[in-house]
Every structure is written in structure tokens, then in C-alpha cells.
Amino acid sequence: MMALTHGLASLALVALATPALSEYAGPPLLAAAFFGGMAPDLDLVAEHRKSLHFPVGYTLLAAIFTAWAAVSPSPGVLLCTVAVGAAALHAWSDVLAGSVEPAPWNPTSEQAVYNHALGRWHRPRRLVRYSGAPEDGLLAVGLAAVALLTPATGPTADAALLWLLVVAGAYVLARKRLTELRSRLAALTPAWVVASFPVVSVEETESGATRIALRRR
Image 1 (tube, rainbow, N blue to C red):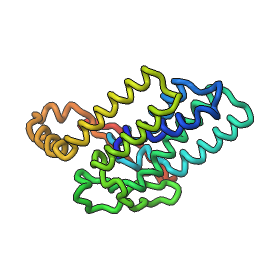
Image 2 (cartoon, helix red, strand yellow):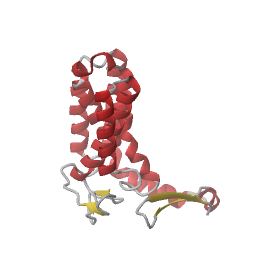
Image 3 (tube, helix red, strand yellow):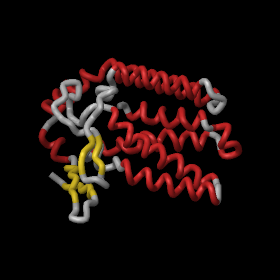
């Protein structure tokens, strides 16, 4: 699924929960949901769906923040609860998506998201075949519509959501061409330019932790 779809899923849930959040509801909470939902995909620069995807870890942390918010509610605690909960939703929902590979529309892998607690990959259910698939775009539209139809979003947020849908639509239309374009750009890039960028590597420690290392070529 697109990072935008994940962000919109969390945003839609928080928008629906606005009546229950009363005084704490507002733009900061919506932003925490949206960016928290997108954040795990920052591991695209490392090992995707593993380095920053922690289904169990995020869920446990979200439960702790939820308990804290129930006992001693405050804007800061609620923001953390929403952001971490959105990251957990992202990590778990990737199980419903396709596999991790350069061309997931021609699947050869059975790796959807890594579960650090179990030490193994969950297999993909492929309800959304790949990031940028037509069904991914339709899902993004539906989730954005949910948020737009609630009183939680004002004119500014509504305009931002519509622009995000334009971006998502463009990505869906260009998705398969992007892989080919990336290969062509890589072939045309001078060796000295490639050498100027560090190598990002992901290492598993003996304790089971993940370490991201940057090294010069």
C-alpha cells in the first residue's frame, strides 16, 4: 500500500473518533495520525517493511500510551498515543498488501512484513496487490472521503486532502513506469555520483535488534 493510504487510514479513524476526543481533537491530532501512519515507510532507504516496521512493538507501546492517557489525559500523551497507534496500524495492515520486491505485480516473494517478536516474516494476503495498484488508489479515495465527510476537517485540511488524492492518482498512473525509470536513471548516473552517496545497510544484532549503518562506498 502507498504510504499515503496508510496515513489516510489513520486520519479517517481519528476523524471518526473526534466526538469522543472532545477538547483534544484538532489539527495536531489529525497530523499525528497522518504522519504517524506514514512514518514506518521511511525504512524504504534501508530494509523495507523490516527496519521501521514493528507490529508487536508499536502495538505494545500504543497500549501503554492509551493506559497513560486514560489515567492522566493530556494533549502530549494523546498525540503520542495516536502517532504510535497509527504506526501500529500501518505495520499490521501491510500483511493485507503484497510482497516486498521491486516489481510486486509479478510476485516471487512471500514476505509482507517482518515480525521482530516472532523473528519471521508474515506472508502477504495481497488484498491490495502492490503500492500504487488501482485498488490502492480506490482505497485512498474512500478513506479520504470518510475524513472529508466528518466535522473534524476544516477547509484547509479538506483542500490538503484533495491535493493528496491528486498526488496519489498520479502515482497510481505512473507506478509501473517508475521501476523502469529508476533502472534507466541508475544506468545513466555517473560512477562518481553513485560513489558520493553512502551505502545504507541493515544488520541484525545477536539480541535480535536491528541496526542501520551508513558507510562510504
